[in-house]
Amino acid sequence: MSRLTANDFQPEVLRLFDQYVHGDISRRGFLDRAAGVAGSASAAVAVLAALSPKFAQAQQIAPNDARLQTRFQMFDSPQGNGKVRAYIAKPAAATGKLPVVLVIHENRGLNPHIEDIARRLALDGFLAVAPDALYSLGGYPGDEDKARELFSRLDPGRTIQDFLVCARILLTLPEGTGRLGAVGFCYGGSVTNILATQVPELAAAVPFYGGQPKAQDVPAIRSPLLIHYAGVDERINAGWPVYEAALKAAGTRYQAFVYEGVQHGFNNDTTPRFDADAARLAWQRTLAFLKTHLA
Image (cartoon, rainbow, N blue to C red; front, side):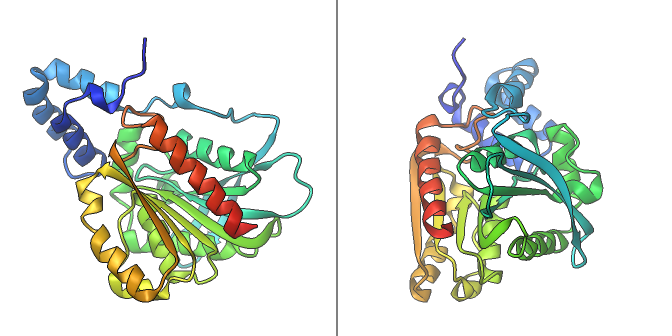
């Protein structure tokens, strides 16, 4: 059986799913509205199941891959929630210090997909560190619906502080070279943009389809940016013209790519919104950018 893609779903269903994923409507709200599009309540349930992540099928690198060393580590976060727990992956054969990449998850916490992203980065020679913003509420619960509900309970300002503290700790991590990059997806893309405005030591920032920072904060950005947007993502893309104007006015080094015809979340290979061609190109660009600026 071939893999489902975004083209297998009606555009209105995809818009509803995007609203559901980002907390704008509830699960019941999605099902009720999707039933009107799909034709029945049972069809709506089937559509939601088809659009939901399939972590095991999409996994590229096993957690016990012999080429890697992985662990969980606790970091103190006095400005945030007290403690932050992070998943860390690095090449098993590494003998010296490595450039560090902070991996920032979507609005469901540190799920298996983000751990897999960290392992992919580690195989390309980075020390990848992926914190879990949900740790203060017990950590990623193993269920995307529960994770989304937990995420809505977080204090946004304190959570940003947790990531800021992590970034500053990683700049002096004994295993690291002191060169720090950040890669974030959706919510994590928004956080990556914010980090770029508040951590002048950041050497590279790669937000995937993330919300933009305040225009007045853009002049504080010192790191080069590699920005990825989905072509079919009106909600996020609406903020790009103002952001781009601010970047140009500030003389910030940036590259921005819009991948036409693909959905928000196109890099996430656990759902049908994944687009293999766009994801491959975006990831190639990301690795080249990180290697250039973190070397």
